[in-house]
Image (cartoon, rainbow, N blue to C red; front, side):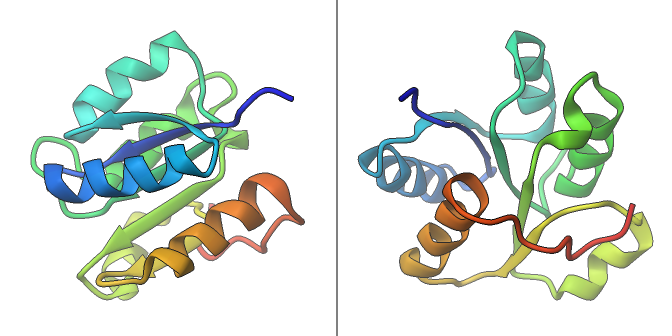
Length: 130
């Protein structure tokens, strides 16, 4: 069984490293990116099985990253977890499709439960719109 690939994007490097380590310990292959542009450039190497991205980032925010992902071949099928300290209502103006929104701060168990459901269990209903 091959490990599932998770692309984790957050400009708060300490958060990214901790979450990446936890996901790696769960058996996922994790790629870390510090901003949306770096993540978008990395997608040329192949689509992840899951994108976890912060919403509020410089250069290219999480919603803009998701919009760009959806335009790439195979990008419409990648489940997305958006995380932010801002309320979920801040995402509505973007009209993007995502599966789960996690409001910061969230627990590691909440993140792991979400990742396991998206990658290893039954699909969740989309939270966002297309």
